[in-house]
Length: 118
Image (tube, rainbow, N blue to C red; front, side):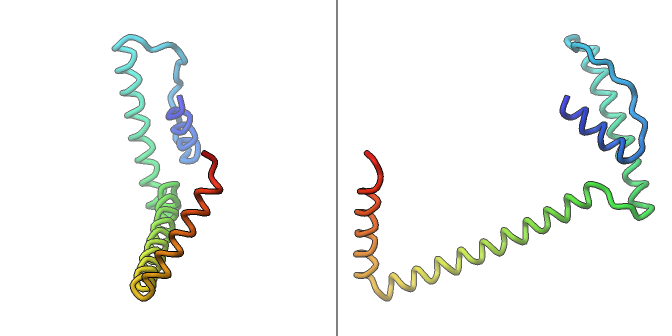
């Protein structure tokens, strides 16, 4: 049902007429096959409408998703770089001051152990 409503919304944006769909319980194999075939035809019509829209210079939903995905990927790469820089700095600090690092970890562990309920 969710896929149907999303397909309907996409078709409305692309101005593609949607075939009427009967809302009935589809328990037989023939009914399911017919529904799958109808969905395939709708997807083909949407793809054709989208390729026509991109040929005229209109931006579709996929181009917006691609831009959002690219921005998210850039943010993940930046976060990855920051984490690796922090890890390198921490390793250098522990190598420089091993006794202070061990004592700090011990104190932190004791504090966490006292704060958490048992």
